[in-house]
Length: 225
Image 1: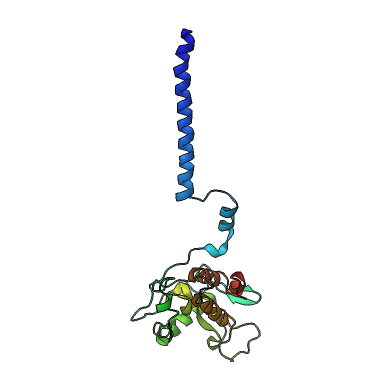
Image 2: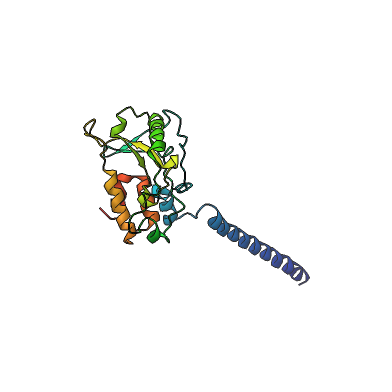
């Protein structure tokens, strides 16, 4: 009986110790899920594999005076193509949002009557110089008059006006006649997304993510095509 009584406290202490370790281990796992990598599971896997969930940089927003922005080194950027349509290099041109446009202030910014973009657009004296530099970044050798110096996140979708990460020399569509001027299929996509955002069909963030990832399938991805 004496040996049984002596062993009981030891066994009880060991059980309590093990329980405490198990609890601490579980607590550590929860902290990791909240503050670190997401816990494994179908939803976490889907999020990790969803290219549209990348973080879009935030630019400086509209400025009273614009200056020529430094561009990526010559030849360092490379076009991608989907359905024969040009897309920018995500390393050089990931897009950039304007901090002046948020979901809460849509009615006073991009969705306001009378328009928003005209008063914040950089002058041609700035963008013409940037366009030549960016053409060198992408190794573009075609006619500059046929290429658009394009905001990946358009101004009507809250894109930053003059952040170099949001601007790229966009070649003309396949089959475009040289010397025919700017003509591409991205502009109608921007307009449809703008209409959807202002009508409440999609959120501003969803539209920005879709067009920054791949403008050629942005409408279908959001169920707008």
